[in-house]
Length: 377
Ligand SMILES: Cc1ncc(COP(=O)(O)O)c(C=O)c1O
Image (cartoon, rainbow, N blue to C red; front, top):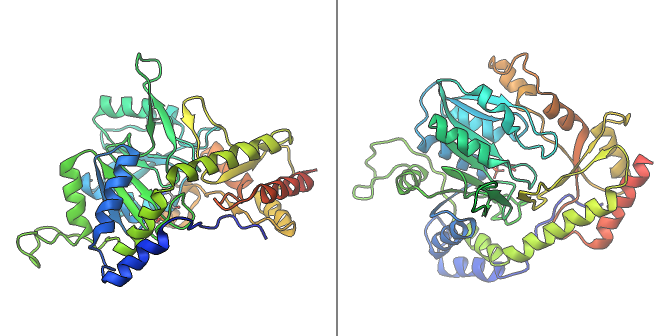
């Protein structure tokens, strides 16, 4: 079976992790935490990094430091992981959904303005499967309406966005450098992993300090065990950061490998009729975190059947996200009832992703493409 993903530890991971064990710095203090935070923030193009224990809590903390008030609304895509909506709800906010762009599968930025109300506080832009959201229109709206932008870059390590197109000085910027705050995940299927892990990035010193305090139970530096605010224990360990730092040292190689994989899949699959493939808009550099494919309506096959048939050919896959408006847990809370988002529904029910790991060889990729072709022939 060709797996959907396998992590690759081909650098100094063992050396760094061994150093933690040998020196005893295995908890949330130690040299690797600061180094990983600083280097990841610098790589992405933000000033401050606050490492946490996963991407879900990075999003939760991103909203907490923005001081969301009960009933404040956050506009976000329906087509994403539940962590995005739960982060809003845990902060007493209200998620307000928009449909997906039919090409990039990211939030359709043309639908955001119509969802803005006097209660809107923020827009959560979630880059999907390695392709950036079209950020400029969102940044314009944020500026005009005084909103914060939370960038969920969990799936776009190293992806780039051409900002300011149409201006005299367009600039390629990394995902995670465009929002008021941005959140990353370093789960094992991400481009770089810490096993479990996440990070919040920002250019704003005040927000960074607030995040550092919240992450660590809001201990007062000058008086431990005395608390003026309620915090969380969202700390990352030095062991995890050691793994992350070693991975980060090979970031360029990893990004190049993923881009090769995405382009190679597209080259080999693009002539198959009725199969929609990932795009790379001229203003984007996709890192193909996961290579998704969507069966067109004319094909009389559901993604689940497609997955079963590929499995019979030795190819493992994963289903696409199911939109937040189709989740029973939110219906039970009276949220998103009778809401419909046709693009998100179509891709959720007809999409899956193919093996996309960094260890995927050319021979395996060819085998996957042959299997796709045979199943759809
Ligand atoms: C877009 C997005 N946001 C957030 C997360 C949550 O990250 P974690 O699994 O580290 O909690 C994920 C996880 O894959 C994700 O894909």
